[in-house]
Image (cartoon, rainbow, N blue to C red):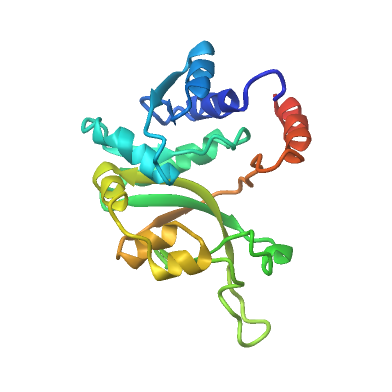
Length: 219
């Protein structure tokens, strides 16, 4: 994309955040490993049996007890905002935060879109719920309420990450198809930081041209 492999764009933006001691690409594909090492990055091979990205990161974390905080950035986010990554990493300056993620303001036309996940927050920023449904419901029209859209980036304390990898799927997780609900149903708190960045992921081939144009525009 725009002259570089997509994973390289993601890796470079993680480096630009200047928030991480190390940036690694975890993969079960030797082709991806070779590409990463070819542009000077570091890759680590994981089991092909990892069902989720969280499980893949947890596998790496088990071998690194020296690293306390782990941030998971998916490889299909070539336009991930370095400043947003810094905000996510900074959540862990608070020793009480065990797991963190990002939200942005929800646009009115996104409220009914099930592909835009809504976040309901407590006053301290902890997540109360995530849903594909238009929550919170406003019973009386005109009642002011702030609505948030979830951005799928996560940070974890190592012990919380390893705990998550042992937990069984939960009813709400299965109903909404939202992995973060597993953590919440098992009683884990997720702190949310608010940013203005809007994700532009590459999910289908049609996304490539649009993202390439944005990459050239932003440099």
